[in-house]
Image (tube, rainbow, N blue to C red; front, top):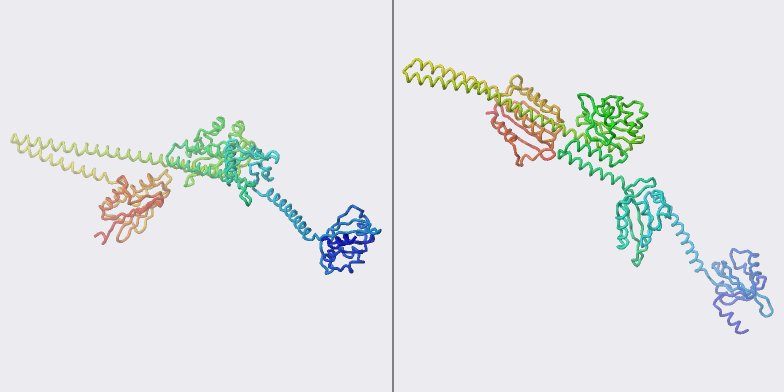
Length: 634
């Protein structure tokens, strides 16, 4: 018994001994240390005096349920003598001691343990909340998000990824996601992904991903590794971003660049326009395109390319008249704006080739006018589809872009044709003038000199026969023939003067010359006169006319300009002649082949004037001639 009492007093856990009705009859020192009450104070107290948040009946039920040999554990909050509460674990057991039935309650302070457990439970709850928030965020994020194990086995795909591809999580898990990748890109993507797994480094690659409706779009696949504190790879996280619009824009930019290169090289117009149609059809595979050229003299439209359109429709459209009820292309030219026919069959404005279009399986058409830089209609760019409907904004933008490129190509071809025809006319005029001069020389000067020689030879013969009077008559006739030939020579020289200056002043001659040279080209010429026009010294008007002609010719042939402006200023001390274009320009200080600039400087020099040439690549060209007059001329 003494040993038991020693054990009771030295045990580390607080022990209370109570009657079955709960009255405490004994407590060890550990119980005193736990509660702060003395043994004397504890004796006579009941458990409900110490336990918080538990009523008398509940505690009595626990005491009554305690059985001999089998301890029962409960968790309670204990209020100490100083008011501090502690979390304790109570083990209740019933036993017989000295003929008395008592309840033994061992009590262990678990405040820190419970606090730790509570913190752990709270942390777990927070982790669950974060997990739910993360899943909610990933499922609602616009991007397609995924994660994978270190070996590349995909274990998570957000809802947007699954909804986009139409695959379930079970189908896409592991390597099942590969079923949504375009077959032309799959081998490269798988190889790149395996290389990332080996290197453990982040990477990205562009591939096409199939949408749930079977449409493929370009995406950027990005993968980033997650390492733990020791550097071990524990997870892969990634995002698949839609870049289809950017890829299409890059493709269109490259296509436009190639088109401009073709135009700049002077490639065949038909080849350029066919490539334009192919560019639209590649961007929208369900679309068929055609380009029609407008013949202004007949007001008809003609196909400019070997279109992929069905032959029956090409035949029906070729030579169609322009008007408000002739179909989308004819209306586009008539109204000079884009015309959209969403359903050819029900088009309220009618269509002369409706049957041909419907018979070819085409149901909608939108046509954009091709306009020159001066607003003149050159033709139309038309797109046909097999389903009724309106073009998307992207389709409209691309159609307008193709129409603009077509206008550049057509205008360049027309300008080249006009320039070639102008050069041919000019060459023909030069040859004709040379032939006329040759005829004049032959018919007047040569024949006159021949007559002079004959008369002189006759005079010599007469002198040899001492027929002085007859010799004098021959010499007189030779002199008369020489004077007549001189008169004819002067007439021929006068004929070399520009006809334009024979009947009109310089200003009118310049205006007529510029109008004739630029007619039918894309260049607009303007002539401004400042001051009061007056008669100029001999040779000035002719040289200024020739200078204007030379500068305008260079503009038409080399500058690629749309504007040519001249300004003739009559001042008191000088006459200034300014010529300017908005073309590509050139370096006046660089070496140039040809006689143009040299001829301009020589003409101005013969009149005592100066020439200034200004310009640079992309800045146009400016030529200023200043001829002194009055006191300055001296």
